[in-house]
Image (cartoon, rainbow, N blue to C red; front, side, top):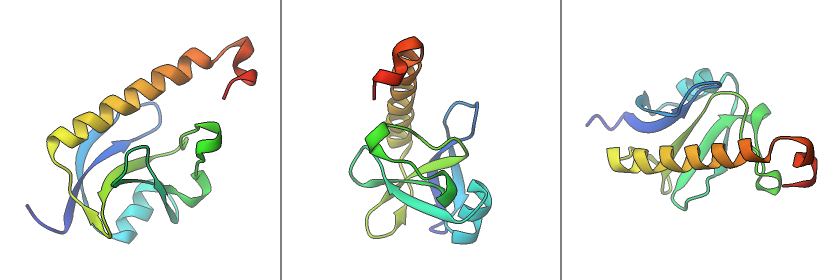
Length: 112
């Protein structure tokens, strides 16, 4: 595989997470997330969430970026994922999405 390409899990607003190859290039990252990038810790060690700095998120409220973001393997630099890894990440994102949907409603303001 071309070392200048990364397999990542890409999440666009209103769409299901998808596995895709992207160039391993900061300017492309910025174009993809529509602005300067923020590289955040992800729920699983060894992975990072890349989103717009304006969309950054925090674990204190379990929110996720509202805009486009992607998950990539990261150990001192970005690395391409295997297909099995992308499936695990997509499964985790689906599970978290279901939990957030269940929290919506009258009492959601009391839950974190």
